[in-house]
Amino acid sequence: MRRFFLIAVPYMWLLALFMVPFIIVFKISLSDTALAIPPYTPTLDFAAGWQGFKSFLSELDWENYVFLTEDDLYWKAYISSFKIALTSTILTLLVGYPIAYGMARAPHEWRATLLMLVILPFWTSFLIRVYSWMGILSQEGYLNQFLMSFGLISEPLIILNTNIAVYIGIVYTYLPFMILPIYSALEKMDESLLEAAEDLGCSRFTAFWLVTIPLSKQGIIAGSFLVFIPALGEFVIPSLLGGSKTLMIGKVLWEEFFSNRDWPVASAVAVILLLILVIPIILFQRNEQKQREAEG
Amino acid sequence: MKRFSWFNATSLTLGFAFLYMPMVILVIYSFNSSKLVTVWAGFSTKWYGELLQNDAFLDAAWVTIKVAVTSSTFATVLGTMAAIVLVRAGRFYGRTLFSGMIYAPLVMPEVITGLSLLLLFIGIGLDRGVLTIVLAHTTFSMCYVSVVVSSRLVSFDQSLEEAALDLGCSPFQAFRLVTLPIIAPAVISGWLLAFTLSLDDLVIAAFTAGPSATTLPMKIWSSVRLGVSPEINALSTIMIAIVATGVIAASLISKRSAVRQRAEEQAAERVEA
Image 1: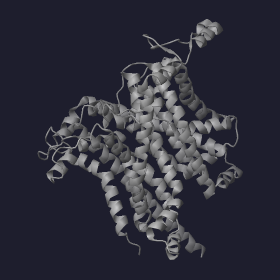
Image 2: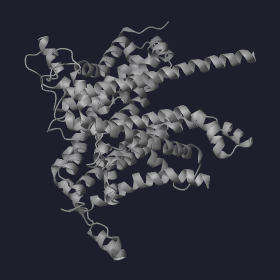
Image 3: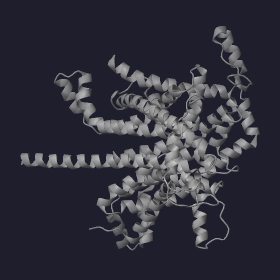
Image 4: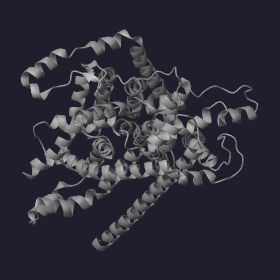
């Protein structure tokens, strides 16, 4: 009885507030837009009983999905989200790896402090961290002021409201997610392996390439997924730092819902995004599983 | 004695400069007297004063704190229960679905979570406001709590609990007197995590809030969409200061208790010897 209660309470909560909402999203993605409250038809009429349920089912169709494939805004947004997420994941890896490497090779008594310094920004507001770049990157912003005062450029660079600003925003906000798994992989590494490689005639660079990188592979994979997956559905960064030309699917969904008030299409956009995300999520889980098996 | 190599020192310096410089600039320019945020015109605290007189911001801050305290408390209770189920309950019908529902919200894009919860609330005719934000935040942050707590539960020795049961404790007493004190640090950090996630959330709150409630991130959002503003800089500085104080205090406390624990262990070893 006690065990039943323990399982049932969180189970019911998640079913009601996580699972059921998804079924509703899926159902509405098959509905039609209507000028009503709520703005879609058909709605399920419980009073009509089984007959009502049957007519309800017969009115559902895949129209919104057909619409998504026909209007090129949507598939362009999916492709461009994918490109932006992939590019920024690679950039985050290039920025994050040297930092993780430096931390793992730092003197022992420094490591806890360095670790805390990486985690600290994660506790401060995401919105504020993105916002802080608006003042830096804008046309009369600090970066342009700095570069012009040194005479490095004569015209201000236009960075804010371009994809470059979105890349910077994603790299900046998701950097800790990349650093932490790589750091924990590198920290476990036995440094005598590097000495062995050098004794056997490797240059330092070859030893790094042939020993360190393969040994930190799992950390690199985990970090990359931890950046790529949330970046794909990102909304705040493209809205604040990106321009009108920056297409990302999270932004499209938001606008479809709040500006166009087209709930069925917004729901269809959400369902497709979810289907796209399933693949990287499964790959990530498999990588974690492999790591656990290697350790245990 | 190991030292920093030249290369590592450079990459760490550049890396941490990148991580901290934007926030340092934000803090410095929050004391700028000019309305033009990017042009320095002398030191002033006037934006803090204006912020404290802005009722809309104060109301939003109050709503945010209420939502964060309630939702993180519910999330801690539910998340701890879920963690115990994941680690201890063994096999039961629908276990795979259960663990799937715990891990899925961690990677779910916020726009999807927000949209789906909103459609649920409208579907069942629940008026949107503080209550719906609390329900939404509890749902996604309980998953974070359960991940944090279950990692602690996995590593702790179950025979301690069995010993308590053998010595005549009821299962609930065993939990309260043995398990809970051991997992307490994880439960507390789970609560803190849930609290910060709730304080921070814009997207899910915007979907589920409705017209009657506005949280601080929503207020900040509607203001920064129009561009950089000195009042937001002041507000950001206050929030950064609170978080930095909290995190540094927490790490000092945990460091001290680690030192004390080591001292006790050493004393115990001496007694044994």
